[in-house]
Length: 115
Image (cartoon, rainbow, N blue to C red):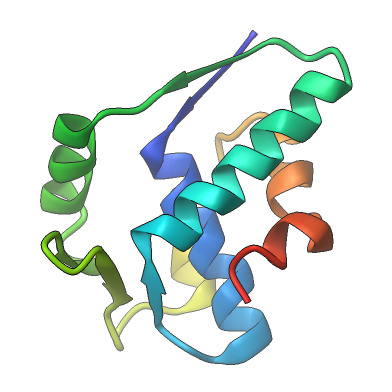
């Protein structure tokens, strides 16, 4: 069983997005589609996934990671701060993630949800 939270989606979405586009702004809707597609792919492969997501947990995440992101809830916009690099994101969000989940989050088909 893989447990997935907003932390896994946001941090890893920005790893791939920043690498491919150099841009630092995504909508929460884009991130949700990206995460949803990755989870569906895992389920297709027979891997059990439990997503733990809520509006309150999203707010808590962005509060706890306010040194990484600016979150504009009313607009649904997430901005990666200029001081944060791809390496910073990888160290913080990719080091302890399940390997199968990480593979799906790095899969180009799933990344295309962000582009």
